[in-house]
Image (tube, rainbow, N blue to C red; front, side, top):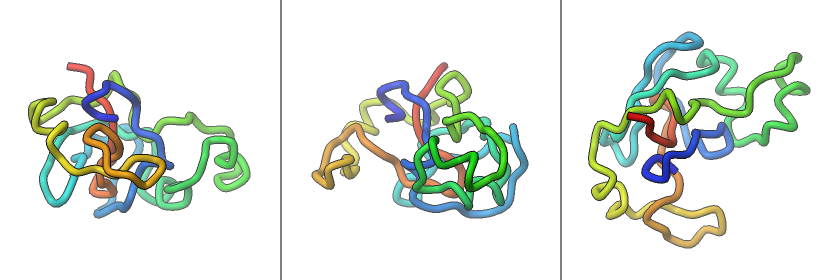
Amino acid sequence: AVCSKKSLLPAGIVSLNGRFIRHEAVKLMHRGAEVARALVNFDAEELEKIVGSHSAQFETILGYRAVAEACERSNILLTTTPDSLLSMDVPSKDGSRSPTRRLRSKESCNSSSSG
């Protein structure tokens, strides 16, 4: 999703590390390597509750209406080249290996790029 310039959704986050507040800059990691930095739309406690969930469930889980994105695409900056992301072995939604799907996270967020 990051090299495809898409937002990072909580459903696409694998794990979180550390504590952060809403709108704080976080590192997006994949296999221990930083691939991007982004402003996160949730604090760490909120994001832990909704990781792996779909946005339709957020209001029930959090008790309030929330944005769908953990990190909005316009708030993500790649710290590596898009070509290097394409060469990473990243799982797709169907479980197959695809070079452009999900990144590991929870050391931050995960997803697209803006510039």
